[in-house]
Image 1 (cartoon, helix red, strand yellow):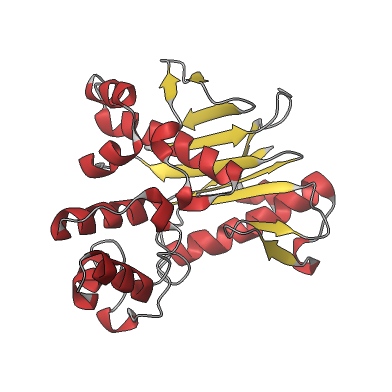
Image 2 (cartoon, chains in turn brown, yellow; image 1 turned 135 degrees about the vertical axis):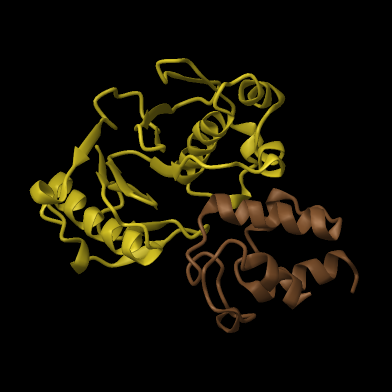
Length: 76
Length: 192
C-alpha cells in the first residue's frame, strides 16, 4: 500500500522517490497545497474503491498515516 | 488589508520564503509587530497565530507567480490559485449541485471551478479548521463582476483575477467594509 500511495503522490510533487518515507508530512515536507491534497485523496478513493470522509482527513498528515488509514479501511 | 505580490517565483520553496517575507512586512506595516521576534502558536487544527497578539489575525497563501497575505482584526482567510485543468472528482466532492451547474454552464469551466475553490478554501482558512470542514456546505454564487453571494453568515468575500490566470479570494469575518481591501505590492516599494 505504501508504494501505491507514494506512486500517487509523485504525480503531484517533484521530489525523488527515495525522499518519501512513512514519516513524510504531505503538507509541510512536500509543500502540497490543499487542492493537490484533495486531488490525491480523490485519486486514492477511485483507484482503491474506498471512501474517505472529510472528518477523517485531519488525521491524514503523513504518508504513514494515510497508509495505516487505508489499510484499516480495506481491512488489510 | 490583503497584500498581494506577483512575480516570477515558480519554485514552491521560493514562494514559501517570499510569502514569509511579505507576512513580516504586512504585520509590521499594519500593527508595528516584528514577526521574527514573536512566538508562534497553533490552534487545535494547526492554524498559526502570534501568541502575544491574539487579536491580530492573518492568512498566507502562495501559488506559481503570486503570494498574498491577509491581515485583519477579525478572522480572515486568503487563497490563491493558478487556473488550470481541474479534477471532476474534486469538483464532485466540494461543490453543490448548483455550483456544479455554474461550472458546467461556464465558457471557461476551469476558471469557474477555481473561483469556487478559492472562495471555499478562503472560508475554511478563516474558520481555521483545516480539511475537516465539508467544503460542499459552503455555497457561492458569482456574478460577471465577481461579486460573491453566499448563504454563510457573518462573513464577506472578495475575489480578484488577473489576465495571467491567477485568482485570489479572501474571506473576512466582519461586517466592516473597510476591512479586507486588496493592496497590490511590488518588490521595489514593499522592501520585503
